Amino acid sequence: MNNPKLEVLTPQNSQLIIIDHQPQMAFGVQSIDRQTLKNNVVGLAKAAKAFGIPTTITTVESDSFSGKTYPEILDVFPDHVILERSSMNSWDDQKVRDALKANGRKKIIVAGLWTEVCNTTFALSAMLEGDYEIYMVADASGGTSKDAHDFAMQRMVQAGVVPMTWQQVLLEWQRDWAHRDTYDAVMKIVTEHSGAYGMGVDYAYTMVHKAPARNQGHNEVLAPVPAPIAAPVR
Image (cartoon, rainbow, N blue to C red; front, top):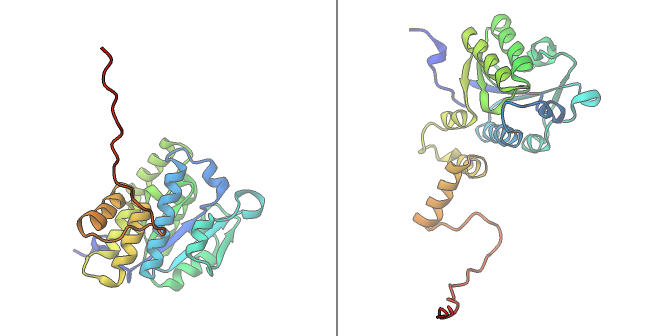
C-alpha cells in the first residue's frame, strides 16, 4: 500500500514551520495553559535544532499587533530569518511557500497560533495546493477556546492532517537510543521540557547510575541532626 503517512517522521523526511508564536496571539489562547504551550513549542524548536530539521518561522503583523516571536524560540535559532506576513493564512505569503519548497520535504510539522485560523487555513491550503502532508502538533498549538481548538483539530484530521504531540515528534526523530549522536541532546530536552518524564530521567541518572546532578553549582548536603524531643507533660 502506497500511503506516505505510514512512514514515520525522520530527520531526513520532515520540516517544521512555527506559525505566529507571538505574545498577542498567545494572550488569546484558552485551550491550553499558556506556560505549558510555550514550554512545548520551545521544546519542539530545540528538538528541530538538535536533529538539523529545516525550520521556517513566520509571524503576522508583528509591529502593529502581535509582537515578536518568543525570545526562547529565537534563542534556539539566533540567525534565522523571520518571514513576516499580513495574511492570516501563511500559505498566502509567497516567501513562506518558497521557503517550504526550498527545504525539499513533503512532510510539514506545524506548531502555531491559533489552531482554528492560522493553522487550519495553512494546513488545508498546503495540502490542496502544495501536495504537502501536514503533521499538526496539537500541544504546541492553541485556540481561543477548547472547542475552537478541538473542532479545528477534528476538521483538519477529517481532511487528512495527522495529529501529534511535541514529545511524539521528538522521540520519532530519535527512534533508537543507539543513535548516540543525538542521544545527549534529546535527554537534555527531555529533562528541561518533558515534566514527569524528565524528572524520571534525572532520578535514574543520579540515583541509579550515580551521575552528577544537572545543577551548575555545588550544594553541600548536611546530614540529619535529630533535635531533642521534650518529654510529654503529665
